[in-house]
Image (cartoon, rainbow, N blue to C red):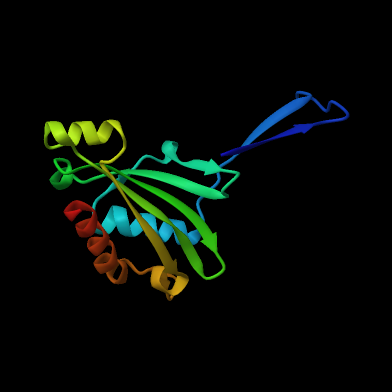
Length: 149
């Protein structure tokens, strides 16, 4: 999160310097996608792994696959940018090594499947609620494509 430091000109029984922490939540569109992945497909996100890239103006998330997919996937990395009508970005599926050849692919980053993602706000949120059921087929299709390539 962000921190703001307030300095008082006159001491009124308080320290000259106070610290407040302001938690920063992801945009509603990002939260909707994360909800669909965590509730619908059972991925797990560690909020401490969230990243901000000031150059690209993107937010990054790392999600761990559910137990049923751990033999095939190590992680899912999302790099998202908020757009006027929703979000865009990439889904990078880090596949699990199954053989010696896969291990060597991993050394040079060839075990990662990168897929472009663009979702409109109305695909993510409907009537103020996350559209989990509507998102699941699209996310499942992306997952199948990543595992099949």
